[in-house]
Amino acid sequence: MSDLANIEGRDAAWLAGEAWKLRAFEAYDAGTGPDLYKVAYAKAFGIKPEDVDKFMRQIGKVMELMLQYEGGVGAYLTGALTYGIDLEEMAERAYGLLPVDLRTEAEGFLQWTRDQKRNTFGLSDRAFIVCDAFKRGWRNGHPAIAGYWKELADTVREAIGHPGVTLTARKLKVRRDGAWLRIGLPSGRALCYPAPEVALDGTISYMGVNQYSRKWQRLKTYGGKLFENVCQAVARDVMAHNMPAIEAAGYQIVLTVHDEVVTEAPDSPEFNADHLGRLLAATPPWARGMPLAAGGFEATRYRKE
Image (cartoon, rainbow, N blue to C red; front, side, top):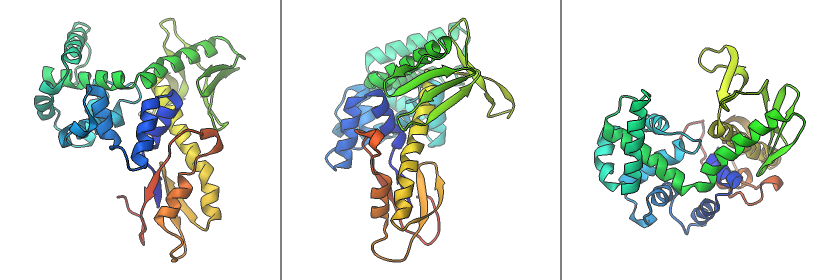
């Protein structure tokens, strides 16, 4: 089997034009740069990647996995729970590491959250402040991605209000055709949202299936969520583009799991995980400039590593 390495992080940087991050991926793939979790922490807090310790790297990992799609404190909390991080313990250690400006902004946001009677997720003041500061640091370190959330949302709003007009948001083509909003992807495929609307307050919605109730209803969305839809679709398109070449090379694809292909192949030296990874990470013609990498393993039965 083989899976695309951090494909959503890579295609997000490519779609939004986060040039420094594209270079960081290229350096890491070439063996000349640090891993991206260290880079993420260093970029957010203005230190050198070589000064990032194991504790900081774990923070950077959750930042990378949870904050790319406009998530905030709640998203970081979800990531911390997923990876078994005790947020209160982490906050005790991380509070003194925060830049003063980020800490001050996060303290102000906590007060605003309370004034508005919004959810603080049951966190202590210190834990909430630390998580919000992580959010701010990540966004400051990723100005192109953070700016693209708004650009994409604004383009979608304008397209909904001007049926039949094709608008661009960097590498995407956005258009409303009758009852459908279509976001054209670099591959030529499109994401389709039925019955799109923009409320008076600017909220974007469309009809779809509620993932919790499984009922057909109007669903709200926003720039970061639309960007997540696009990034995951582009990741799928990269894998799908390379699947015919994988099978043509003699690997029989048994199934796919997210960004991973599971294959059966003859028990012969020329069939191996490195070769399969090179086939999977081949750059499609429509994705020039997107740094791709893949890795995997050989086994007699499927497992996760």
